[in-house]
Length: 465
Image 1 (cartoon, helix red, strand yellow):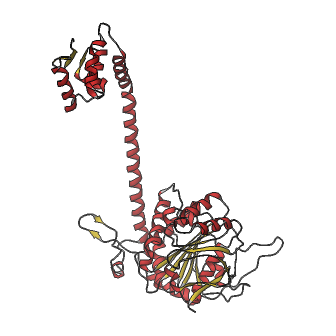
Image 2 (cartoon, helix red, strand yellow):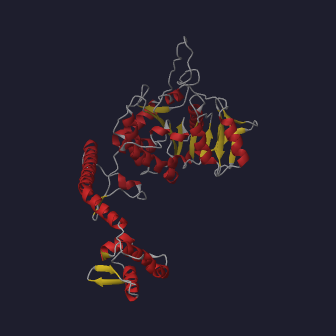
Image 3 (cartoon, helix red, strand yellow):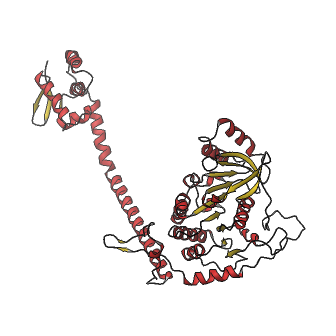
């Protein structure tokens, strides 16, 4: 076997991916029922055949079906399930880093079933898992499948934990290949996946998509790299694609842009549409006792990476380039206590934010208190600017207004024609020229030389012409 055989192209040719797909990044997109999860499962089946390790994060609770064949018999693939209704091992909610280290220490196929946990647990677990993965370089590369990608990397984030989860996932997708990790994001709605994360996926497999926002998101992502004719055909056919059929686009890795039909999966599909009145098919799972025993032993001895202290800045995160041996130091405090310290830091951060909010509120109160004085002074200057005293023959000054031009010098003279006596500060303010600037002083010198003004201290008086 030299490639992952996923199905056929519309022209009848075999559609497959080279083995180095294990370290590539993919996005499988399409509406519910279009065949996204089946496509990802077929990729996982082919990786099992090729002995390419993979890990799936499954909030839906259907990937355990790879342990049984299509008819529910226990002849599927040896996939270890952590958590969920069919878990071989329980899911420790606060042990994302520990489980990550265990899974990269053994060449296994694994499903982390999150379907019985809260969304808060999903994001907290994946954050710790991704950060831990990036601290290790496994001997054999492996692929990460992520169902319901918008739950972990949404376009808009409302809480800190979600932002942290998105940042950790984006780092894995962007830099994971350097460590030997590939990634596949699976989503019904491309418009709801963070664009910075989605743009890092170098290969697309788009199945039936009908929403205008989703089609627009795909068009923006593809139009710079596809021909106008190819893009037009792609968009025209999206809404009518049959289940299991999609457009595969790989602009750099394989230089391919073609419509493909994914083969049927070989394993049990717990999420298949059920017929009313027909009992759901039961499945017997393949034995993975040997794998589970290995993982259980690995989990019992794994340690959590510890940041080394820095003489200048206190605790710092370890450099990603440091060797794995640097992280084998045993914890001086229990893992639970370390998490409590993290929560304490988060509480301090929340208190700092509250203090900043209080300071902004106080500043707003000061601004409100000074508003009457500001309005009064503003009204005074506006009144001064609109007052036109009697007794000034403007016609006599017209030649000088023309000589002054259209700049600030003319505005100073026009202001004095309306108000013959002003302080320098008032004159500059009403004319729109800073009375402290060298430009103001130059204008004043020109007016004084030509007998247009008289000055005494800070006061300026219109001269007689």
